[in-house]
Length: 588
Image (cartoon, rainbow, N blue to C red; front, top):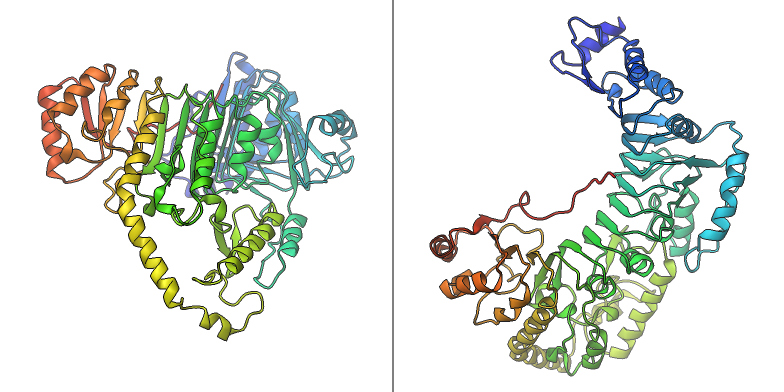
């Protein structure tokens, strides 16, 4: 009956692979529960076998449980393991590592780490307790000691493991300590903290400190000790899974990748402060939590950076270079802006650069004031109220931002009120209703200021464009340049990137002798045979030009000119398949 049920659930044409052998469904009874014994026997009879990929869970959970219990007790010489949806305790995972003395790469397609039950691992705890007391420095304001709280706490020892990757993982222990002395690469995707725990719903009437305490009272603590870690990849993973210890403990971190819908506003600053000097590759794929200040911090604090990929956040070029914006003279911010941009880019080793940049400040969200003057710039809405990104991790920052905003509103006296909380701080509705309309003097001042901005915007944009080129031309090792971000089609709302025309001053980029691939983001109607001849002479290694997809006749005209004057060059429409993107997985 069991085999019949499995045959009904799984298509017969599906050929599964275990290790290097494919089983014939008709001749071999692959679906019986004892088929896991054949796999274990195959490992025993082939001591040279170095890689194994299994998917017993596709047949039934009984196959997976049986194979798990067999493999963790089998001593073998495997070096690369790709396992299916395992549900194990830290003790069982330690047993697997103990019986795998040559294992270097371990990957789980699904992993649930359960709590140890009635397991005495005091010896392991005594071994790691002294390390965490001396080697880890907690964040500012975090007084919680990073030591095991009980002799039955959970410890995972990865021993000689060099690469660890998990997808769809969940962690159930209250405390989890991961010892990885030889770990070089970590990839964590779609992972979360214990989904079986009761979810605490926050309401707008709750105090922020109460929310903070309630949130953390149900969040386990996961601590990593990976001093040799070189590559860290986090893809849509809860912040508690990738604790600060994972990117603060290493002393050799070279590559970091964070991809999520939103990340904590302090994450980039913390990573750069701890690892900025030796970082060689940074990939940021997210929609909120990344600001122009973070991008500028990376460009000015990472001297060994080789690859920088941040395609999803539109950044005004003026926020990345040292230039004063005359359109904001009169608001008292010119000196502050000059002070903010007095540093030059330090990433002179950069070879691949992909940003989403524009020349129009009005296209970005930080047009009204410098970034430091926006206490709610990186906020998201929860339960009807606006909370800053990362406010759960640092409630004091939210309170400070609230106080700064109130002080600014009181100093302004007139003008638009804060529309984020229309009935906040106990003020009556009539008072807010009276403040909804500015005075006549305020309107006149606003109109004159807008006319002043429009009159000075062309000159300001030219200075921003020239200043950005001055920084870009110093990246003499640059091989790939794309300033259109994730876009593969022409952006109609705003002009992205830089013009590559002689009239706009592209001659300053003649120092990019190593450039091999460039993305033309616009201004194609102004490009002709002169620009083609200049590219051939100034960029001798250029072998590929990509265009944003558009039905413009000017692009067709320029592509025809390229085919005639430069037939050796590869011309293509930009596509996410041929655009540069760092690999998601990395195994040593």
